[in-house]
Image (cartoon, rainbow, N blue to C red; front, side):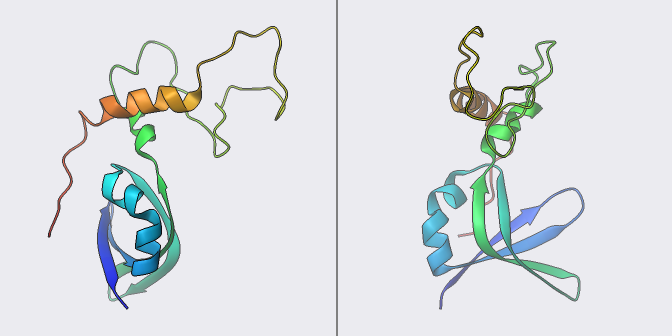
Length: 128
């Protein structure tokens, strides 16, 4: 079976993500295009080498907007929860407030900020 390796790094460590061909093909657009991702899978660690065998990948590129100075307009930058709702959205799930103005869709706002975030991110390293 074919495997694709992806190196993830943060301030503390480096991890090698292993994508089996089938998993890679399922998440190819995210793996190839995202600037920030979340990987869920089986963790393997031996001799200070960390591997994650990927099961699921999520594109977190829109979350990079918190790095933008332009996002700091004097108001707190709200981040969507796992359900996609903003943290300060106190409405019950599925219940709309008839008196509240209709807000712009969160995804559109995040997509716009995501484009700006690309300006502050370093270019990826491609070892092909």
